[in-house]
Amino acid sequence: MTTAILKQPGTTAAKTPAARKPNRSFVHGILTNKKALTGMAVMLVFIALALLAPVLFPGDPSRITAMASMEPSAEHWLGTTAKGQDVLALTVHGSRSSLFVGLTVGFASTFIGILVGLASAYFGKFIDEALSLATNVFLLLPGLPLLVILAAFLPPGLGTVILVLVVTGWAGSARVLRSQALSIRSKDFVAAAVVSGERAGRIMFREILPNMASIVMGTLLACVIYGIGAQAGLEFLGLGDASTVSWGNNLFWAGNEGALLTGSWWVFIPSGVCIALVAFALALINYAVDEVTNPRLRKIKTPKDTERRASK
Image 1 (cartoon, one colour):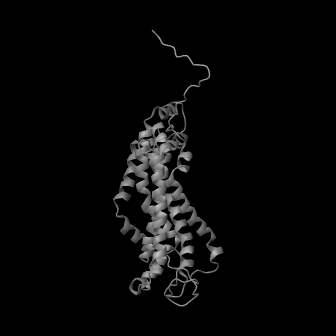
Image 2: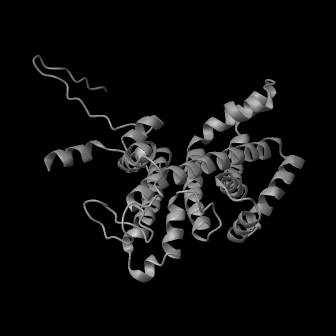
Image 3: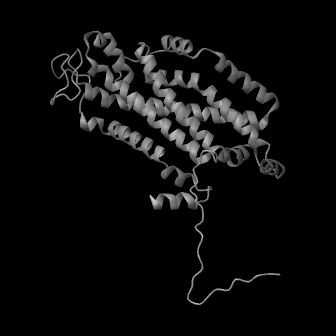
């Protein structure tokens, strides 16, 4: 026996609010994520400062402009170094070199990792064994001693720092991307593309790579953080180009000039805080990417949550 529910005249059917679907687009998810917005805002500030550095502080930032070891004041907001250089000018100009090296190392290391990971996972057999062996060798080599040795024997310069960091930083991303590519390689749509006669390059970059977007994004952000931190570490040890203005060299000269011993905190804190803020901003973006792409971390609003917030 069936029961029919008749709609009474003058009444309207109650509409049930639909829950938000979890399959939102990646861009929309990033733009509505608080962590991503905070991280991107911080990064935009630093990028703007790096681009506007020659306008804000024209000329050579290393020139002597005031008395030595002056505390922060209205004339020099972050004080001066033991040589009489403006700390704010050094910090703002230092962002240009540090961000350039970090972004270059990040993109180069990720690109090499994509090539090695995709080729290893797709072709398999001998190519996989050879590329996996090379990756394992670079992973087993101690990172810091290798960085020190390469930087000490190569001619100083920004290009040398980038080369050293890329050589020592691609293996980790290649290993992560290979494992992800292996799982996608076994999918049916990849097998169908192989059977249909698609070229290997097209299958790797048009079929497999788009399905690894979240992993590639996380790897890129991690490599950028590594590049900025490793450059600062090398330059702090005196293995970089001392004539370049960067956050790492600012810390190097602060240590050489005894800023810690004299209590001149305004000389070394700004560059250290900038490195920490950039790493924090990139980490926030990385966490946001995980939340958007991982269904287990994604927060889905239900009708009960909406009613509970409305009642409050």
